Each structure stands twice: as structure tokens, then as C-alpha cells.
Amino acid sequence: MQRVRTAPPRYWLVAVVVIFFLGFPTVISSFLASEWAQALILAIAIMGLNILVGYSGQLSLGHGAFMAMGAYISAILAHQYKVDYLLTIPVAALTTGVVGFLFGVPALRLSPLYLALATFALAVVSPSIIKRPHELTGGVQGILIAQPDPPPVVGDLFTTVTGTVMTSDQWIYYVALACALLLFWLAWNLSRHRPGRAMRAIRDGEVAAAASGVNVAGYKTLAFGISAFYAGTAGSLFALSRSPARCWGRSSPTSCPSGRTSGCRARPGCRSRSPPRSRTPDRPSRTAWS
Image: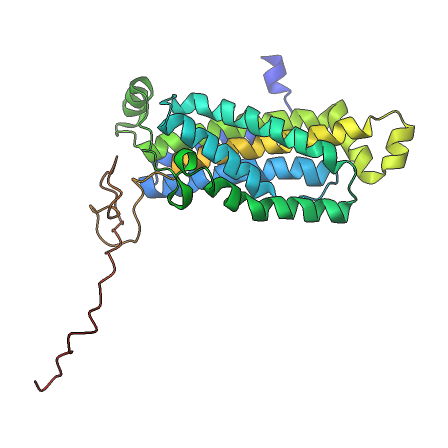
């Protein structure tokens, strides 16, 4: 109890912010909860990019490629192999982290300018590479996965506390919030301990850091791996949140996109896009006086 009373003010501020985000979906619509889930997902990706650029001082313009890798790994596992969507998140994150670590090994020999160009090239060629294995990735059409429903235990607990039924958008919001809090805690501890101090030393001066006994090559590749790990987590959550049940537009409360009806639900403020009308130029148009 004494430790709680003497806690620094920043801990109380963090506790207030966490309580606010926990109760926030109960006072907003399901659509706004999905938008805030997207904000949390992008915050995870930004945290990873901050570790790479802000702490280790390496320029990267291809962070979206690692997000796409994490998204497709989760989508393929959930859609084709019927793996539980919660299990696909750590699998996608770890796989993307390993790929990012391996990508960081040849990047050690590049200067900051050429490293930025290399990562930019990775982002440019990633869409073409993803479209090649059509049977695995769906080609240009992509992969459509149904938005996951909340588990019965979590849904019953949410109903008991709030008196309302938990929607899939709210469940994705809480999953993204849990991942964001966990990864924020990991990044906070990383920055306060030896790896974070070593990365800041490399950012300020590689020669001075090497003279102080810092393993420059090791921490640079570690920063790439951690950054890709965060990007893979964000991409996995992004794939699970962007389901075929999401509607377009803001007029009709019950309709969903044409041809994408698996897992659709009525969503307030949504309407489907009407299919384009086919023009028949061989039939003469009627004039106002005919």
C-alpha cells in the first residue's frame, strides 16, 4: 500500500489513460470503435518505426512491406489453414521479425542514404511479389476473411458490465488495445535498459559507440528485427480488422458491399456501392421531346 501511495505521478497518469481507453468503446458507436482500433494498430507500427529510426538512427522507407507481410501471413493462416485468429498474431509477428532481422544484415554495409533507397525499393516491389503466388495470396483480389466474433466468455462479461452486446468491432478494439499496451511496455523497458542506451549511442556516433564496446552490427540488426516485429503485429491486426463485413458509404443502415456478404451485419451509417451501370452506345438516347 505504501508503494502505491508513493508511486510517481506518471504511473497514475498511465493508469487513468488505460482506464479511459478501456471504457471508451462503451460510449461510442461500433463504427467509431473500429476507427479507433485502426488508430491503435497504426500506433503499434509507429512504435516499431520509432525504435528503428528514432533510437538506432537508421532510415527506413519500407515499413509498409513488413506490415503487408504480417497481414498476409495472418490472412493465409486464418483463411486457408483455419488457424485461430489470435494465434496468427504472434506467428505473423515472429516471422516478420525474423525476416526483418535477416534484412538488417546486408543493410549494415549501406550508408544511410542508400539504406533509405533500399528500403524504398522493398516497398515498391512488395505489391508485385505478393501478387505472384495467386493461389496463396489471391492475386490482385486479395484474401477475404470474416471479422472474428468475440469469445462467449468475453462477450458475456462485457454484457454483464455494460448491459449491451459486444460487437466484433469492439472486440477487435480491445485486442488491438491489449497488443498496443504490451508492446508499449516492451518498448519502454527497451529504451531504459542496455539495448536502448546502446542504440542511442549508435545513433549519436557509431565510432564512439564502437570505441565504448557497443556491438554496432548486432544492435543495428536487432533494431531492424524489433521494428519488423512491431510492423508484423500491426499488419496482422490490420488484416483481421479489415473484413468483408465492413460497409462503404454512410447512408443505409442495413446494406453491405455487393458481392462481399460473408459475415455481414447491419451497421449504422453504411451503404453498399451500387454496381456500375453498363452503357449501351448502340441504343439511341431518348430526347426530352420524343
